[in-house]
Image (cartoon, rainbow, N blue to C red):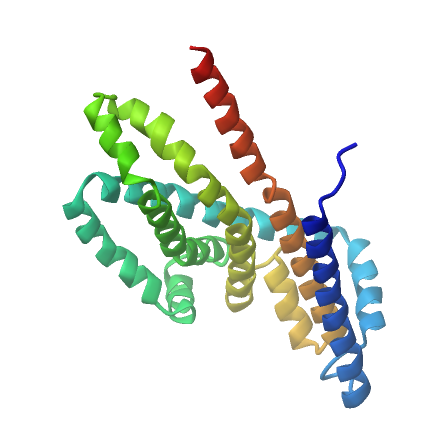
Length: 263
């Protein structure tokens, strides 16, 4: 069995310490305020979580919210990939497309959500809002990963007459994957947060955002906190699961290097 490195143990320790600090701040704040309608107790929130876990509607809503966040994230990633590829091969395309990216980056989320409610439905609005929020971020990350490629590799490829296809799959993609994979978890977690916020504004039915809006309307504060905690836990699990992607890319690159060495 592989032993955990001291650095990983230290990182785990500080992560647990951060959770303990936030939990302690919650307990202290509740003791000071002492008002369930402002801040519910931690234990009441946990009880509400167990109640939610027994509701089939909650699991359906959680799955629907995650799928909307995933759709928005995937569309943003694919469009950013196309835009970044065009920007990488053409300076004129980069100048042209950067204007669209800048506009999408500066559009207020609340304003676009309200406008989309006039043009779309509460089901599709969170997906579109998530896409609009994640696309500029994904595009900037891809361009940053492309610029981080050693220019000497591109010059070497031109000198030796390496085809464009081989440049993409043997030079550019392997060099960019570690950076892109390291951002996959945080981006999907961010998309989940954006999707829930859009669902609240749109009052989307069969959604965590819709359940939050309903709980707020009936002043079910502990239920609101329980739903928020569930989203936080889901986001943490997503980041943890996708945190293994950089390791996969490292193994893939090492495997390719061995094959090339054999040839």
